[in-house]
Image 1 (cartoon, rainbow, N blue to C red):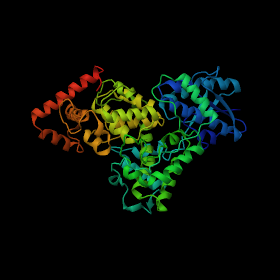
Image 2 (image 1 turned 180 degrees about the horizontal axis):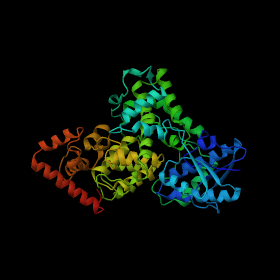
Image 3 (image 1 turned 120 degrees about the horizontal axis):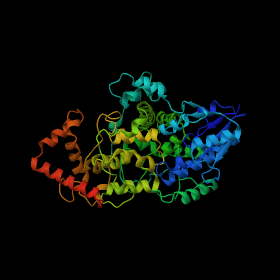
Image 4 (image 1 turned 90 degrees about the vertical axis):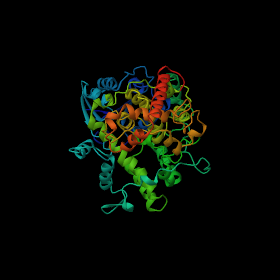
Length: 509
Protein backbone atom coordinates (compact mmCIF):
# COMPACT_ATOMS: atom_id res chain seq x y z
CA UNK A 1 0.00 0.00 0.00
CA UNK A 2 1.21 3.51 -0.78
CA UNK A 3 2.82 5.50 2.02
CA UNK A 4 3.17 9.25 2.29
CA UNK A 5 6.75 10.47 2.80
CA UNK A 6 6.89 13.84 4.55
CA UNK A 7 9.77 16.16 3.70
CA UNK A 8 9.91 19.41 5.68
CA UNK A 9 11.56 22.67 4.71
CA UNK A 10 14.63 22.02 6.86
CA UNK A 11 15.01 18.42 5.65
CA UNK A 12 16.29 19.04 2.12
CA UNK A 13 18.74 16.12 2.01
CA UNK A 14 18.62 13.11 -0.29
CA UNK A 15 20.04 11.10 2.64
CA UNK A 16 16.95 11.88 4.74
CA UNK A 17 15.91 8.80 6.72
CA UNK A 18 12.29 9.03 5.52
CA UNK A 19 13.47 8.92 1.90
CA UNK A 20 15.94 6.14 2.63
CA UNK A 21 13.20 3.90 4.03
CA UNK A 22 10.58 4.69 1.39
CA UNK A 23 9.90 2.91 -1.90
CA UNK A 24 10.49 5.28 -4.81
CA UNK A 25 8.38 3.14 -7.14
CA UNK A 26 5.32 3.22 -4.89
CA UNK A 27 5.36 5.92 -2.20
CA UNK A 28 4.49 9.60 -2.54
CA UNK A 29 6.59 12.47 -1.23
CA UNK A 30 4.55 15.24 0.38
CA UNK A 31 5.98 18.77 0.55
CA UNK A 32 3.96 21.88 1.39
CA UNK A 33 4.41 25.57 2.04
CA UNK A 34 1.89 26.12 4.83
CA UNK A 35 0.71 29.13 6.77
CA UNK A 36 1.24 27.63 10.20
CA UNK A 37 4.96 27.15 9.58
CA UNK A 38 5.42 30.46 7.79
CA UNK A 39 3.57 32.41 10.46
CA UNK A 40 3.92 30.87 13.94
CA UNK A 41 6.49 33.60 14.58
CA UNK A 42 6.97 36.65 12.33
CA UNK A 43 9.83 35.13 10.33
CA UNK A 44 12.25 37.36 8.46
CA UNK A 45 11.12 37.62 4.82
CA UNK A 46 14.53 36.42 3.64
CA UNK A 47 14.18 33.31 5.80
CA UNK A 48 10.76 32.48 4.35
CA UNK A 49 11.98 33.08 0.80
CA UNK A 50 15.08 30.93 1.34
CA UNK A 51 13.05 27.99 2.65
CA UNK A 52 10.33 28.18 0.00
CA UNK A 53 12.78 28.50 -2.91
CA UNK A 54 14.99 25.72 -1.57
CA UNK A 55 11.93 23.47 -1.08
CA UNK A 56 10.77 24.04 -4.65
CA UNK A 57 14.19 23.22 -6.06
CA UNK A 58 14.52 20.14 -3.89
CA UNK A 59 11.12 18.91 -5.07
CA UNK A 60 12.33 19.31 -8.66
CA UNK A 61 15.48 17.33 -7.87
CA UNK A 62 13.44 14.51 -6.31
CA UNK A 63 11.22 14.29 -9.38
CA UNK A 64 14.29 14.02 -11.61
CA UNK A 65 15.45 11.14 -9.42
CA UNK A 66 12.16 9.32 -10.09
CA UNK A 67 10.10 10.21 -7.01
CA UNK A 68 6.42 11.05 -7.16
CA UNK A 69 6.20 14.41 -5.39
CA UNK A 70 3.08 16.32 -4.43
CA UNK A 71 3.96 19.94 -3.76
CA UNK A 72 1.60 22.53 -2.33
CA UNK A 73 2.49 26.19 -2.74
CA UNK A 74 1.43 28.77 -0.20
CA UNK A 75 -0.95 30.42 -2.65
CA UNK A 76 -2.53 27.19 -3.94
CA UNK A 77 -6.30 27.38 -3.62
CA UNK A 78 -6.50 23.91 -2.04
CA UNK A 79 -3.74 24.57 0.52
CA UNK A 80 -5.00 23.12 3.82
CA UNK A 81 -2.92 25.51 5.91
CA UNK A 82 -0.86 23.16 8.11
CA UNK A 83 1.43 20.17 7.71
CA UNK A 84 -0.99 17.68 9.35
CA UNK A 85 -3.89 19.00 7.29
CA UNK A 86 -1.89 18.66 4.09
CA UNK A 87 -1.00 15.08 4.99
CA UNK A 88 -4.67 14.28 5.61
CA UNK A 89 -5.60 15.82 2.27
CA UNK A 90 -2.98 13.78 0.43
CA UNK A 91 -3.90 10.63 2.36
CA UNK A 92 -7.44 10.93 1.06
CA UNK A 93 -6.19 11.64 -2.46
CA UNK A 94 -3.93 8.57 -2.62
CA UNK A 95 -5.83 6.23 -0.31
CA UNK A 96 -2.96 6.14 2.19
CA UNK A 97 -3.10 5.69 5.94
CA UNK A 98 0.63 5.57 6.73
CA UNK A 99 3.20 8.36 6.89
CA UNK A 100 6.98 8.08 6.97
CA UNK A 101 8.58 11.17 8.51
CA UNK A 102 12.00 12.10 9.79
CA UNK A 103 11.75 13.53 13.30
CA UNK A 104 11.14 17.30 13.08
CA UNK A 105 13.41 19.70 14.93
CA UNK A 106 10.62 21.30 16.95
CA UNK A 107 8.53 19.71 19.69
CA UNK A 108 5.31 21.42 18.58
CA UNK A 109 5.49 19.77 15.16
CA UNK A 110 6.44 16.38 16.61
CA UNK A 111 3.31 16.57 18.79
CA UNK A 112 1.14 17.66 15.87
CA UNK A 113 2.25 14.65 13.80
CA UNK A 114 1.78 12.24 16.69
CA UNK A 115 -1.79 13.49 17.21
CA UNK A 116 -2.84 12.72 13.65
CA UNK A 117 -5.46 10.04 12.83
CA UNK A 118 -2.90 8.36 10.55
CA UNK A 119 -0.17 5.86 11.37
CA UNK A 120 2.89 8.13 11.52
CA UNK A 121 6.36 6.58 11.81
CA UNK A 122 8.89 9.13 13.09
CA UNK A 123 12.39 8.06 12.09
CA UNK A 124 15.61 9.36 13.69
CA UNK A 125 17.28 12.26 11.91
CA UNK A 126 20.51 10.56 10.86
CA UNK A 127 21.98 13.72 9.34
CA UNK A 128 23.40 14.57 12.76
CA UNK A 129 26.51 12.92 14.16
CA UNK A 130 25.07 12.21 17.59
CA UNK A 131 21.64 10.63 17.96
CA UNK A 132 19.24 11.61 20.70
CA UNK A 133 19.78 8.23 22.36
CA UNK A 134 23.57 8.62 22.25
CA UNK A 135 23.37 12.05 23.83
CA UNK A 136 21.01 10.83 26.53
CA UNK A 137 23.45 8.03 27.41
CA UNK A 138 26.36 10.49 27.51
CA UNK A 139 24.39 12.84 29.77
CA UNK A 140 23.16 10.18 32.17
CA UNK A 141 24.60 10.50 35.67
CA UNK A 142 26.55 13.71 34.99
CA UNK A 143 26.19 16.52 37.53
CA UNK A 144 26.61 19.09 34.80
CA UNK A 145 26.51 18.91 31.02
CA UNK A 146 29.46 20.75 29.53
CA UNK A 147 30.08 21.08 25.83
CA UNK A 148 33.85 20.73 26.13
CA UNK A 149 33.68 17.13 27.36
CA UNK A 150 31.00 16.21 24.84
CA UNK A 151 33.14 17.75 22.10
CA UNK A 152 36.08 15.55 23.02
CA UNK A 153 33.89 12.49 22.67
CA UNK A 154 32.77 13.69 19.24
CA UNK A 155 36.38 14.20 18.19
CA UNK A 156 37.16 10.62 19.19
CA UNK A 157 34.04 9.31 17.45
CA UNK A 158 34.67 11.10 14.15
CA UNK A 159 38.47 10.97 14.20
CA UNK A 160 38.59 14.63 13.22
CA UNK A 161 41.87 16.34 14.16
CA UNK A 162 43.06 13.31 16.07
CA UNK A 163 46.60 11.96 16.27
CA UNK A 164 45.90 8.44 17.39
CA UNK A 165 44.20 8.75 20.77
CA UNK A 166 45.40 12.32 21.28
CA UNK A 167 44.17 15.63 19.85
CA UNK A 168 46.15 17.12 16.99
CA UNK A 169 48.65 19.64 18.32
CA UNK A 170 48.43 18.29 21.87
CA UNK A 171 45.38 20.36 22.89
CA UNK A 172 41.64 19.86 22.47
CA UNK A 173 40.83 23.55 22.36
CA UNK A 174 42.69 26.53 20.88
CA UNK A 175 40.10 29.12 21.89
CA UNK A 176 42.71 31.18 23.72
CA UNK A 177 44.23 32.03 20.31
CA UNK A 178 40.88 33.06 18.82
CA UNK A 179 40.01 36.31 20.57
CA UNK A 180 41.67 39.09 18.57
CA UNK A 181 39.87 42.19 17.33
CA UNK A 182 39.86 42.74 13.58
CA UNK A 183 41.04 45.73 11.61
CA UNK A 184 38.74 47.59 9.29
CA UNK A 185 41.34 48.24 6.60
CA UNK A 186 41.65 44.75 5.11
CA UNK A 187 40.89 45.35 1.44
CA UNK A 188 41.33 41.69 0.57
CA UNK A 189 38.59 40.30 2.78
CA UNK A 190 35.85 38.82 0.59
CA UNK A 191 32.18 38.41 1.42
CA UNK A 192 30.43 35.09 0.76
CA UNK A 193 29.44 34.76 -2.92
CA UNK A 194 25.97 36.00 -3.73
CA UNK A 195 23.63 33.74 -5.66
CA UNK A 196 22.43 34.80 -9.11
CA UNK A 197 18.69 35.13 -9.40
CA UNK A 198 16.54 32.63 -11.28
CA UNK A 199 12.84 32.24 -12.11
CA UNK A 200 12.05 30.08 -9.06
CA UNK A 201 13.64 32.57 -6.68
CA UNK A 202 11.97 35.55 -8.35
CA UNK A 203 8.55 33.89 -8.16
CA UNK A 204 9.07 33.16 -4.46
CA UNK A 205 10.28 36.70 -3.77
CA UNK A 206 7.12 38.12 -5.33
CA UNK A 207 5.00 35.79 -3.19
CA UNK A 208 6.82 36.66 0.04
CA UNK A 209 6.74 40.35 -0.79
CA UNK A 210 2.97 40.19 -1.20
CA UNK A 211 2.21 38.01 1.83
CA UNK A 212 4.77 39.10 4.44
CA UNK A 213 5.35 42.77 3.71
CA UNK A 214 4.80 43.73 7.36
CA UNK A 215 7.37 41.32 8.77
CA UNK A 216 10.58 42.75 10.21
CA UNK A 217 13.41 42.49 7.70
CA UNK A 218 14.47 43.51 4.21
CA UNK A 219 13.64 40.95 1.52
CA UNK A 220 15.71 42.43 -1.31
CA UNK A 221 18.45 42.18 -2.32
CA UNK A 222 18.24 38.42 -1.87
CA UNK A 223 21.66 36.76 -2.08
CA UNK A 224 21.16 33.35 -0.45
CA UNK A 225 21.82 30.23 -2.49
CA UNK A 226 18.83 27.90 -2.59
CA UNK A 227 20.20 24.52 -3.67
CA UNK A 228 22.99 22.16 -2.70
CA UNK A 229 25.29 23.23 -5.54
CA UNK A 230 25.11 26.84 -4.36
CA UNK A 231 25.67 25.86 -0.74
CA UNK A 232 28.79 23.97 -1.80
CA UNK A 233 30.06 27.08 -3.59
CA UNK A 234 29.69 29.08 -0.37
CA UNK A 235 31.57 26.36 1.51
CA UNK A 236 34.34 26.34 -1.11
CA UNK A 237 34.66 30.11 -0.83
CA UNK A 238 34.96 29.92 2.95
CA UNK A 239 37.59 27.19 2.90
CA UNK A 240 39.65 29.04 0.29
CA UNK A 241 39.36 32.64 1.41
CA UNK A 242 38.23 32.88 5.05
CA UNK A 243 39.09 29.74 7.02
CA UNK A 244 42.79 30.62 7.51
CA UNK A 245 41.83 33.68 9.57
CA UNK A 246 38.49 32.47 10.91
CA UNK A 247 39.80 31.30 14.27
CA UNK A 248 41.87 34.32 15.14
CA UNK A 249 39.11 36.83 14.44
CA UNK A 250 35.94 34.79 15.04
CA UNK A 251 34.88 36.97 18.00
CA UNK A 252 35.58 40.30 16.30
CA UNK A 253 32.93 42.80 15.18
CA UNK A 254 33.21 45.66 12.68
CA UNK A 255 30.55 48.21 11.77
CA UNK A 256 31.12 48.00 8.02
CA UNK A 257 31.92 44.31 7.67
CA UNK A 258 29.11 41.97 8.77
CA UNK A 259 30.81 38.77 7.63
CA UNK A 260 34.53 39.16 8.41
CA UNK A 261 35.93 35.61 8.17
CA UNK A 262 32.75 33.73 9.01
CA UNK A 263 31.47 30.88 6.85
CA UNK A 264 27.79 31.94 6.73
CA UNK A 265 26.77 28.33 6.09
CA UNK A 266 24.52 27.83 9.12
CA UNK A 267 21.35 28.24 7.07
CA UNK A 268 22.55 25.62 4.57
CA UNK A 269 23.55 23.16 7.27
CA UNK A 270 20.30 23.59 9.18
CA UNK A 271 18.14 23.22 6.05
CA UNK A 272 19.96 20.04 5.04
CA UNK A 273 21.80 21.32 1.97
CA UNK A 274 25.17 20.56 3.60
CA UNK A 275 26.13 17.70 5.91
CA UNK A 276 28.13 18.49 9.06
CA UNK A 277 30.71 15.77 8.54
CA UNK A 278 31.50 16.79 4.96
CA UNK A 279 31.96 20.39 6.10
CA UNK A 280 34.34 19.39 8.90
CA UNK A 281 36.30 17.05 6.64
CA UNK A 282 36.84 19.89 4.17
CA UNK A 283 38.19 22.07 6.96
CA UNK A 284 40.42 19.29 8.26
CA UNK A 285 41.81 18.72 4.76
CA UNK A 286 42.69 22.42 4.58
CA UNK A 287 44.73 22.03 7.78
CA UNK A 288 46.48 18.88 6.62
CA UNK A 289 47.59 20.45 3.35
CA UNK A 290 48.90 23.55 5.15
CA UNK A 291 46.26 25.95 3.85
CA UNK A 292 44.75 26.83 7.25
CA UNK A 293 46.27 26.86 10.77
CA UNK A 294 45.16 24.52 13.52
CA UNK A 295 43.58 27.21 15.72
CA UNK A 296 41.20 28.21 12.91
CA UNK A 297 40.30 24.71 11.85
CA UNK A 298 39.83 23.44 15.40
CA UNK A 299 37.66 26.44 16.30
CA UNK A 300 35.49 25.92 13.24
CA UNK A 301 35.09 22.17 13.74
CA UNK A 302 34.27 22.73 17.43
CA UNK A 303 31.33 24.93 16.46
CA UNK A 304 29.86 22.13 14.35
CA UNK A 305 30.58 18.78 15.99
CA UNK A 306 30.87 20.31 19.44
CA UNK A 307 28.45 23.16 19.92
CA UNK A 308 25.86 22.39 17.20
CA UNK A 309 25.50 18.74 18.17
CA UNK A 310 25.57 19.55 21.90
CA UNK A 311 22.81 22.13 21.58
CA UNK A 312 20.59 19.73 19.67
CA UNK A 313 21.17 17.08 22.32
CA UNK A 314 20.13 19.53 25.05
CA UNK A 315 16.93 20.46 23.21
CA UNK A 316 15.65 16.92 22.93
CA UNK A 317 16.95 15.86 26.35
CA UNK A 318 15.18 18.69 28.18
CA UNK A 319 11.81 18.18 26.53
CA UNK A 320 8.89 20.31 25.30
CA UNK A 321 8.73 22.65 28.31
CA UNK A 322 12.26 23.97 27.75
CA UNK A 323 11.06 27.09 25.95
CA UNK A 324 8.90 28.09 28.93
CA UNK A 325 11.74 28.34 31.42
CA UNK A 326 12.61 31.59 33.16
CA UNK A 327 15.03 30.76 35.97
CA UNK A 328 15.88 34.42 36.67
CA UNK A 329 12.25 35.60 36.68
CA UNK A 330 12.89 38.26 34.07
CA UNK A 331 9.68 39.97 32.93
CA UNK A 332 10.52 43.20 31.08
CA UNK A 333 9.24 43.58 27.54
CA UNK A 334 11.63 43.35 24.62
CA UNK A 335 12.47 46.95 23.67
CA UNK A 336 11.21 48.29 20.36
CA UNK A 337 14.81 48.74 19.19
CA UNK A 338 14.95 44.97 18.52
CA UNK A 339 12.29 45.47 15.87
CA UNK A 340 14.06 48.44 14.32
CA UNK A 341 13.12 51.19 16.77
CA UNK A 342 15.53 54.06 17.33
CA UNK A 343 18.38 53.66 19.82
CA UNK A 344 21.44 55.67 20.81
CA UNK A 345 23.45 52.49 21.46
CA UNK A 346 25.64 52.08 18.40
CA UNK A 347 26.43 48.40 18.95
CA UNK A 348 22.76 47.44 19.17
CA UNK A 349 21.88 49.70 16.27
CA UNK A 350 24.43 47.95 14.05
CA UNK A 351 23.60 44.42 15.20
CA UNK A 352 19.85 44.89 14.76
CA UNK A 353 20.26 46.82 11.51
CA UNK A 354 22.45 44.09 10.11
CA UNK A 355 19.91 41.49 11.20
CA UNK A 356 17.13 43.46 9.51
CA UNK A 357 19.07 43.71 6.24
CA UNK A 358 20.72 40.28 6.09
CA UNK A 359 18.80 37.89 8.38
CA UNK A 360 22.28 37.18 9.72
CA UNK A 361 24.56 38.11 12.59
CA UNK A 362 27.48 36.06 13.82
CA UNK A 363 27.61 34.35 17.19
CA UNK A 364 29.30 37.14 19.16
CA UNK A 365 26.87 39.77 17.89
CA UNK A 366 24.04 37.50 19.01
CA UNK A 367 25.55 36.49 22.34
CA UNK A 368 27.46 39.55 23.54
CA UNK A 369 25.46 42.42 22.01
CA UNK A 370 21.76 41.64 21.51
CA UNK A 371 21.71 38.73 23.97
CA UNK A 372 23.91 40.37 26.58
CA UNK A 373 21.76 43.50 26.63
CA UNK A 374 18.49 41.55 26.95
CA UNK A 375 19.89 39.52 29.84
CA UNK A 376 21.32 42.53 31.68
CA UNK A 377 18.06 44.43 31.20
CA UNK A 378 15.96 41.56 32.55
CA UNK A 379 13.89 41.00 29.41
CA UNK A 380 11.36 38.16 29.40
CA UNK A 381 13.28 35.23 27.85
CA UNK A 382 10.19 34.00 25.98
CA UNK A 383 10.15 37.28 24.04
CA UNK A 384 13.89 37.07 23.39
CA UNK A 385 13.44 33.48 22.20
CA UNK A 386 10.70 34.46 19.78
CA UNK A 387 12.82 37.29 18.39
CA UNK A 388 15.83 35.10 17.67
CA UNK A 389 13.63 32.40 16.16
CA UNK A 390 11.99 34.95 13.88
CA UNK A 391 14.81 37.10 12.59
CA UNK A 392 17.64 34.74 11.59
CA UNK A 393 17.66 32.61 8.45
CA UNK A 394 19.39 29.73 10.23
CA UNK A 395 16.99 29.63 13.21
CA UNK A 396 14.98 26.51 13.96
CA UNK A 397 13.85 25.79 17.48
CA UNK A 398 16.18 22.83 18.13
CA UNK A 399 19.21 25.06 17.60
CA UNK A 400 17.83 28.47 18.55
CA UNK A 401 16.11 27.71 21.86
CA UNK A 402 19.07 26.26 23.81
CA UNK A 403 21.36 28.94 22.40
CA UNK A 404 18.96 31.70 23.44
CA UNK A 405 17.35 30.39 26.63
CA UNK A 406 20.43 28.52 27.81
CA UNK A 407 23.63 30.11 26.55
CA UNK A 408 22.38 33.66 26.11
CA UNK A 409 19.67 34.25 28.73
CA UNK A 410 20.47 31.66 31.44
CA UNK A 411 16.73 31.00 31.56
CA UNK A 412 17.36 27.28 31.95
CA UNK A 413 19.17 27.87 35.24
CA UNK A 414 22.52 26.54 34.08
CA UNK A 415 21.75 23.50 31.95
CA UNK A 416 23.77 24.85 29.00
CA UNK A 417 26.24 27.19 30.69
CA UNK A 418 27.92 27.24 34.08
CA UNK A 419 27.44 31.01 34.36
CA UNK A 420 25.52 33.77 32.58
CA UNK A 421 27.34 35.36 29.66
CA UNK A 422 27.29 38.99 30.74
CA UNK A 423 29.81 41.74 30.23
CA UNK A 424 30.17 45.48 30.57
CA UNK A 425 30.89 47.74 27.63
CA UNK A 426 34.61 47.01 27.92
CA UNK A 427 34.25 43.69 26.12
CA UNK A 428 32.35 45.24 23.21
CA UNK A 429 34.92 48.04 23.03
CA UNK A 430 37.78 45.54 22.95
CA UNK A 431 36.26 43.33 20.26
CA UNK A 432 34.69 45.93 17.96
CA UNK A 433 34.77 49.46 16.60
CA UNK A 434 31.19 50.17 17.71
CA UNK A 435 32.06 52.31 20.74
CA UNK A 436 34.08 54.86 18.78
CA UNK A 437 31.02 56.51 17.28
CA UNK A 438 28.45 55.87 20.01
CA UNK A 439 26.35 58.48 21.79
CA UNK A 440 27.36 56.86 25.08
CA UNK A 441 30.89 56.80 26.49
CA UNK A 442 32.22 53.34 27.20
CA UNK A 443 34.73 54.74 29.71
CA UNK A 444 32.01 56.46 31.75
CA UNK A 445 30.80 54.42 34.72
CA UNK A 446 27.99 56.72 35.87
CA UNK A 447 26.09 59.71 34.56
CA UNK A 448 23.92 60.53 31.57
CA UNK A 449 26.48 59.34 29.01
CA UNK A 450 27.61 56.20 30.82
CA UNK A 451 27.51 53.14 28.59
CA UNK A 452 24.28 51.29 29.44
CA UNK A 453 26.19 48.01 29.47
CA UNK A 454 28.37 49.37 32.29
CA UNK A 455 25.35 50.35 34.38
CA UNK A 456 23.28 47.26 33.71
CA UNK A 457 26.19 44.87 34.28
CA UNK A 458 26.52 45.80 37.94
CA UNK A 459 22.76 46.13 38.33
CA UNK A 460 22.38 42.54 37.09
CA UNK A 461 25.03 41.23 39.48
CA UNK A 462 23.54 43.13 42.41
CA UNK A 463 19.96 41.93 41.91
CA UNK A 464 21.04 38.30 41.37
CA UNK A 465 23.65 38.18 44.10
CA UNK A 466 21.94 35.38 46.02
CA UNK A 467 22.12 33.12 42.99
CA UNK A 468 25.58 33.88 41.63
CA UNK A 469 27.82 35.12 44.44
CA UNK A 470 29.01 31.59 45.23
CA UNK A 471 29.57 30.67 41.58
CA UNK A 472 33.36 30.15 41.33
CA UNK A 473 33.43 31.67 37.85
CA UNK A 474 31.77 34.87 39.12
CA UNK A 475 33.35 35.32 42.53
CA UNK A 476 35.96 37.76 41.23
CA UNK A 477 33.24 40.01 39.79
CA UNK A 478 31.55 40.26 43.18
CA UNK A 479 34.84 40.95 44.94
CA UNK A 480 35.41 43.83 42.52
CA UNK A 481 31.91 45.19 43.20
CA UNK A 482 32.39 44.91 46.94
CA UNK A 483 35.63 46.89 46.81
CA UNK A 484 33.92 49.86 45.18
CA UNK A 485 32.96 52.91 47.22
CA UNK A 486 29.41 52.55 48.54
CA UNK A 487 28.32 55.92 47.19
CA UNK A 488 29.59 54.96 43.73
CA UNK A 489 27.69 51.66 43.88
CA UNK A 490 24.48 53.43 44.83
CA UNK A 491 24.94 55.88 41.97
CA UNK A 492 25.48 53.02 39.49
CA UNK A 493 22.31 51.31 40.66
CA UNK A 494 20.32 54.54 40.56
CA UNK A 495 21.50 55.34 37.03
CA UNK A 496 20.74 51.80 35.89
CA UNK A 497 17.27 51.99 37.41
CA UNK A 498 16.61 55.29 35.65
CA UNK A 499 17.75 53.78 32.34
CA UNK A 500 15.42 50.80 32.78
CA UNK A 501 12.55 53.13 33.62
CA UNK A 502 13.13 55.06 30.38
CA UNK A 503 13.21 51.77 28.49
CA UNK A 504 9.91 50.68 30.06
CA UNK A 505 8.29 53.98 29.13
CA UNK A 506 9.27 53.49 25.51
CA UNK A 507 11.74 56.37 25.41
CA UNK A 508 14.68 56.24 23.01
CA UNK A 509 17.56 54.62 24.88
